[in-house]
Length: 260
Image (cartoon, rainbow, N blue to C red; front, side, top):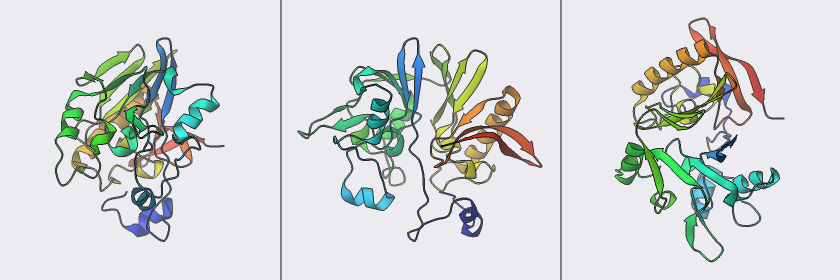
């Protein structure tokens, strides 16, 4: 998760277990919009086998055979059929794994049957043309059969919801910028997966273009600080969101919002 950063440094921020794994969240974002409920990313889903679950230490199962995402929606009084839009930041298994689901009969179908699914056009093409480096992250059963609405570059998907290209992790990664009542928030996804990754050079080994990640972060940090964005972290196990401020030559998180 930290690429070339020495373990002696990153372990202070994210202590690993005896298998060198660190706690991570699968935090999806639900937006109440005039056009209906909008879901940003869908987690890992319910399609993976026991070996996969063990390797990654996934704790995501629901008692009804679905996942904790559906449990969380249910706790808010919503069913999968209530979701009207699903927006994927990219199509890696931990972000689009819940786009499809396998029902108790073994049939695979879209997990949110009444939703429009949105992704960057070139991201879908990139995911469909895998190679030895990308095959472990792009699993076809997560996006096969999904009737995607494809967008190109920076796009207003709905009023107040904009996809902005943030390349580096993968070439066609997008973050989702939200605006309401004069406030802005950005679901940054794998551009900065956790608060521990805020330093510019603390870049994941999973990133296909780490130097692009660095420059994308520099650009987004400047904009986020200038415009007062609330940054929402998809994978941080405890910190949900916060704002950026300058700290020496780098940035620091202020006004952090932690899980209770």
